[in-house]
Length: 472
Image (cartoon, rainbow, N blue to C red; front, top):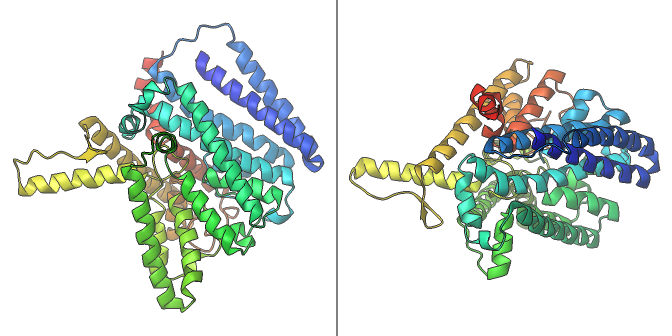
């Protein structure tokens, strides 16, 4: 427990420092952020001092506990400035959990007149959640053997272990890449017509594939084709594996099966929906292409920005976007969803199974990146999808008890677990928000975002007796 308290204490002190800086920078919310910084910093200091001189033994079970508690602590502490400002506790926690998990679902309206300090804090939560998940996805989840991520460890760092010997070194390298892409995105946005503040907020929430904006109109407030294309590119950049950036730039080797799969998904989805939209609307091809490309990339990468309400494009488009909600970007990125690597493994395992029905003595085995996929990886991936489906459908059933219509219940559950942001329908779609949902539904959706971000098993194992017996 020493490491758990230490990690959470350091997180709280770091968040308190950021709150204090925002309070000093924006006088209209100074009291809110300085009070929150005092409370959070005090809690973090106590947690850190309480274990300062204790032995820090580390076991695999500690990784589960550290990973599981960090996001709860971050969401709870992140909600305090929002609560001190003017939000109800459930709304503040929902907004903070949506931020730290980079989901982007919001209960806030009137963003155009919301104090800048609050808007910046929401964006910082998403940026921190993005880098936190990259590090967890590469340094921790492979160790925990969650959802087949041990294979991703092989793909991304088997050879790189000689160059990046520790998780700390990898985290530092990743942070530089992440920060560099964010600064580049900020500069491009500002050059394209955003104010410096708008560019900062949107750069933080683009690379984190979070999707919080400074306006109720989301990205559509700008009505600039250049900015839409720039946003499309940088959202896609956030959904690529960051280990791939480091290996590719360093060695000139950009081969990655999940990156190629993501590119194919983009191309096919954009082509089909563009053709449908041009056929049904008669709008100019390049205008339709721009809106479709932005919307598809936003949903697949789980960013959640919107320039138009794509749920009004007809049944084919609405169904396509609902399916795309579950796809996700690449493992080792900031993106949510099931991830390309897992979809590839499932398809290849199914192909081998069908092949063995026809050729029972076939010795062919499923492969990924040229390597045979072990049974432990297949089991991990299949377990992930089973838990993913149970969580989505279970959450949808619970939401239905709050008298939400079937589409709202299901799309809200799916968008929460996939960490996408907007759902389908007039209430929670791209032109709506989650403010009108019952309080109980918001608490359940917060849990869905949390479980989805930590890829299910990391959360559910904390509710088992075996885990606590081994930890004792």
